[in-house]
Every structure is written in C-alpha cells, then in structure tokens.
Amino acid sequence: MNADARACMLAHAAVLRHAGLRAEALDLCDRLIAAAPADTHPVQLSCEIHADGGENALALARIEAALSRGVVTGALLERAGALAHACGDVVRAVAFWQRGLSVDPALHEAAMRLAVVAIADGRPDDAARLLDRMCAVGSETADRTMSAAMLLRHFGHDAAAEAFVDVYTALAPDTPERTHRLASLGRGPVPMRASADYVRHMFDGAAASYDINLLAIDNRGPRILASAMSKAGLAAGAGLRVLDAGCGTGLCAATVRPVADRLIGVDLSADMLAKAAERGQYDALEMLDIVDLGSAFPHCADLIVCMDVLPYFGDLDPVFTAFRKAQANGGYVITLIEDLSGAEACRFLPSGRYRHDRDRLIASARAAGFAPPTVEFCDTLRLEYGQDVVTRCVIFGP
Ligand SMILES: C[S@@+](CC[C@H](N)C(=O)[O-])C[C@H]1O[C@@H](n2cnc3c(N)ncnc32)[C@H](O)[C@@H]1O
Image (cartoon, rainbow, N blue to C red; front, side):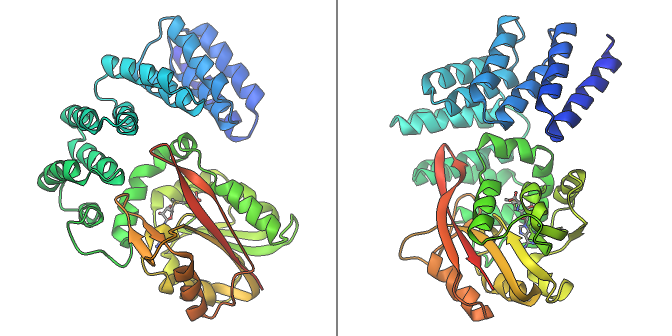
C-alpha cells in the first residue's frame, strides 16, 4: 500500500471515529499498522479511539506495542506518560516523560507534568529547574515562560514565578493575550471580563487541538449537562429552541440535540465555530458575544446552555441580562461556574479565568429578573495540573 492510499485510509478511520464507529475505525488502524509498522499516525489514532471510550489501559498498550516495535517518538512517550498517569501509575508516567524528554527536549507537556510531580513531592526547586530547561528549548519561548509562571503561581510558589513573569514581560508581543495574562499574574488591573479580542486570540489558537486536549484533562462538561437536563426533566423529543452560548467546538451538541427542535451555537472564535460546524449537529452557528444574545435572539430560547463560559467573566451581570432577554417565556438556563467557596465573590486566577462564589451568581441572576435556581449541584468539571476543578451547575427553570 503506498503512502497516498495509507493517508486516505487514515482519514477514513478518523471519520469513522467521529461517527462513533469505533470497531471499524480500529480495524482500519490495525490494517495500517500491519502495512507500515513504523508509521506513528495509526498508532496515535487507535490510542485516541480507546481513550475516547475511557479505555486508558488499552490506549497505553497500543503505544507500548509501538515502542516494542522500535517506533519511539517524543510525542508517543509524552502521551504514554499521560495515559499511565490517568491509570494511576505515577512512577511509570514519570519514566515515560523522562524518556520522552531525552528523545525530544522540547516536549512541553512532559516537562510541565514532571514539574507538577516534583512540586507534589515537595521539590519546588527541581520543578523550577525543569521549567527553566523547558523555556530554553523550542520556539515558543514566551508561551512556555507563561506556562511556567502559571504553574508555579497555581501552586503558590509566587517568588519562583516572578522570574518567569519577568521573562514573559520582556518577550511577549503586545497582544490582548499579553495584557490579560499579565493581569492574571498580578501585573496589571483585574479586568471585568476576558476581552473579546483575548477570547478570539486564545480560542482560535486552541481550536485545532481543543477536543483532544479536553479529553486529556478528563473534561466532564457534556456529562454534567446530561445530568442537569435529566434533573430538569428535559427529555428527548422536547422540541425546544436551544441556544448553545459559547458553544466552542460543539462538545455539548450531541447531548443537547435530542431535546432541540432548533439548535443554534454562538461563539466569539471563528476557528472554534468552524470545528463545531464539522459536527453537523447545529442548525446555525453565529459569531457573537454572549452579552449580545438578547438583542440577537430576543425571547427566542426555550433553553440556553452555557457550559464553561462564565469563567471568562468577572462581572456576571451583563451575561444574565442577556440570558433574560434571550429567554422565551417559560424557558430554562443551564450554566456553570468554577465554584469558589470562600469569603470572596470572585477571584481572577493565574489561569486567566475567574472563579465565582455561588451567591454572586445568584445575585446577578436575580438582578436580571430570574427566580432562584430550581436545581444546583457540584461536580468535577475537569483536571487542572492533575487536581479536580470543582464546578457548580445551576439551572434556572420556568
Ligand atoms: C472552555 S470553552 C467551552 C466550550 C463549550 N461550551 C464546551 O463546553 O465544550 C469556552 C468557549 O467560550 C467562548 N467564549 C468565551 N467568552 C465568550 C463570549 N463573551 N461570547 C461568546 N463566546 C465566548 C470561547 O471562544 C470558547 O469557545
């Protein structure tokens, strides 16, 4: 089989994966691996098909089989480390990441994950050394120094973080991202929200690898949405007009589609919207700021779904005002915040996101005219540096 035929077959396997035809997609991968055992692409694809289904051990076995055939790349070793970690085997994960870095010193993820392990082991100096080395290789030095600063800040190593922030300040071009990132690290006034320019810049850059990255951090947004819909009594065939506010690549589309007669996704990022379009689940997709939902769709939505978007707002008042205007009489809103249980109403995090107190969210909703929520529950949204990010899902009902 020549290279063109193999590329066609690989593309076909990817389509089968997206269509949920796992066995068929894996079968194609196996045939490709048999035809060209040194090709890493079918190995990576088969690995991700298993990981999609939560079969991390099987995904890891795919990479180990390739390694034993002598197919050794930094990317495979980095992924093997993440999978071993997801299987609870930190020792093996560390070994994969170290080996990965010896093959390819520019591996960003492996260096970050090893730094997190070093911090967890009480070796912050080792973490800083690893991060230093990570910043010294590869072409994306500004991004790498920012990642290093964020990680150290996240774990409270503020003094060590400062050196990286200095380097970032000197290197980063003057973009909306630079302003936002520096503010999130205490070098500038806290903005009321992530600006539209920052959101576009960041998510256009993230769109291509968004879905795979979210899998790696165990994103549970769609599952939380399914649970919220069931608690609200929303069942397939409800025939609702649904707005997916901040739809991203459409990860929640398959969950909400069965209750929708018409499903519209809105987002600020053109590249995220393009990915959402590939799913073929939306009736329409629009580039729009969610604070403009009310004027774009006045009293049109029987259900507004807004998953993992409020963390890009400090002040939630304009968002709930927009939801209220877009909501049809008797409509629902399902949304979530990163839950801040403390004295503060809102905290701007080193990640550049905002965490909110539950009462702050309710106050914004009430000010916009919403009755108290009909249902609330907490769950883990995803992992950040291997730790649970606790989210509060809130449903406003008719
Ligand atoms: C973390 S992603 C979540 C995507 C999707 N809701 C999901 O659950 O997978 C956040 C999305 O919100 C979008 N976003 C952030 N602020 C926005 C705003 N003010 N208006 C519209 N979209 C926004 C981003 O472009 C990004 O696609």
